[in-house]
Length: 194
Length: 200
Image 1: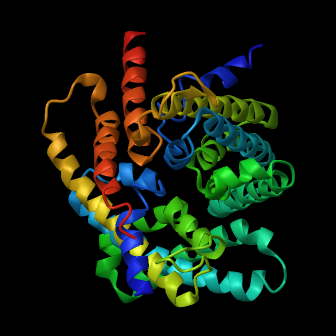
Image 2: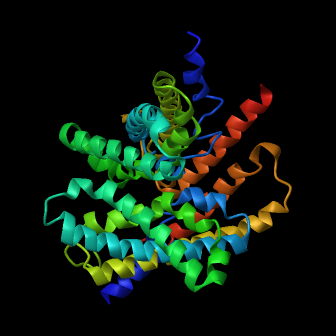
Image 3: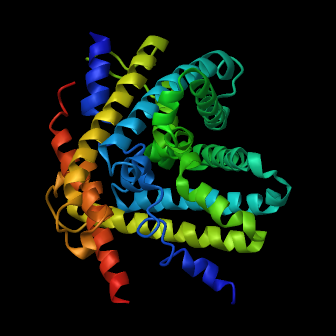
């Protein structure tokens, strides 16, 4: 159980969205509903865990000067694997998330964990770190998605409990920035109280 | 006329930052001062246009004929990384003053998702402009689209940096300090840009 903290760290202390503020583009763009946020988070987690494992294994062999291009190639490979898998098994999800699946390559969280964690730890710890940060990212995206879906269309995970149209702006671009901004305020308040 | 529509749509209606959410990280990172914001915008503008032309040709003449479209993601990111390196070396040689001005922004652009985002968008998405049937962009249109998009990036970036310089001097509640208030400001800006939707 001593390694459990690698997972929990990614959740609150190193929360990728609210504390490290990394990977903002998918966070803002794909959280139009709770389901989309959840799916995007899981897709990123898939790449994060696998690239963390491979990078921790090859890191000792990679010369320092070319490490970033090597890491990016590893990440891009897993993103391509993910794209092919999603096209085969979940084409509808692939269609909804669209551009933001290939863009996981340039998600700073993935490269950040490779550079900041995986190249200094063994494969097991890196996998746990990938799981923790991935879950933290997924949870943040889902929460943002839930808030935007309630305000924007009066529903949660597609289950409508407020009749009527909701506030359209929250499903569109401005809502993404506003909801993330106000959630960050709440998170700051919570951290300050602790 | 079509080119005009592409330009208006890319700069205002589908602004890359405020409507498409691409390249947010550097947007929040370097918009503290107007001078760095303009430097970053210049570098991004240059790289997006160049990278789009190169990846468009690569896709059209290498990947598609050989049925290798699944390699798009990996080959595009490598091309972009190599291009950024090359631009850096060439600039250092030809125009040291511009190189100095762009400074650390150049290497950072590799991981700016706006570059990869635009490159992938122009080769995969069907565009429907001015009532015409949806179709792939040709090289000229792709170049204009990339350039106009990066102008939109620069516009949003500089406007926001101007606002943020003023914000810095104001008394903001403690929990709102820094990023939260910046995000809320961008949200209100995005609302203003929503007013452009429906023009094209």
